[in-house]
Picture 1 (cartoon, rainbow, N blue to C red):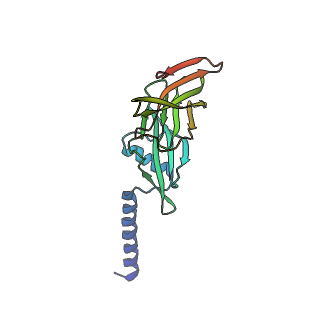
Picture 2: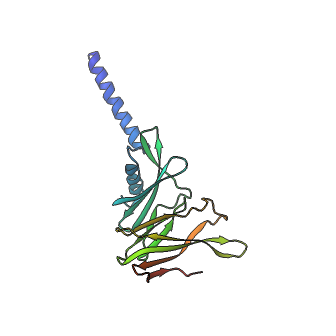
Picture 3: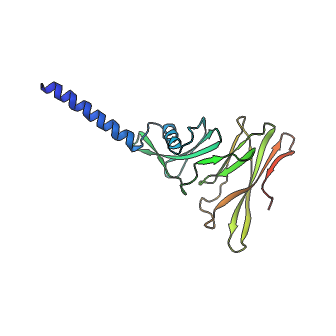
Length: 193
């Protein structure tokens, strides 16, 4: 066999092995591709559309997408400058957020409120955040946040609360209220503690 043919065969084998390693390492060329792969690995998705992307302090991103039964929250981080890989969120269990009511709001680990509203007449949503107080053995009101609902039913807002809650329980959204154009309440979820 001639030397030129050996070099070509060697390069093809090298490309094949490199491609296999790249494929198995979970690296992707875009954050959206990394998110789609993570969702498919978790047996749902991929998301129909990406509704929100925000950066974390360490340079990684969190993508929020809409899929058929709710929202999907996936963290991705850059690798080697041009590739992206999915990363665990802080508690590692918040990816698939199911819609159980016509209006749902979820608190991400970076204290963004994200949610969906299936009521076409609703124009704004008010969410109340609580934290569990160990001394009082009850939930304590922390903050109220009002957000506009987009045409696609998606809403989000920054809570501007510290990421680490004052207790190990963290913040929760315990009250969601959707209002119409004239300010009338259309939907209420949760007790107004």
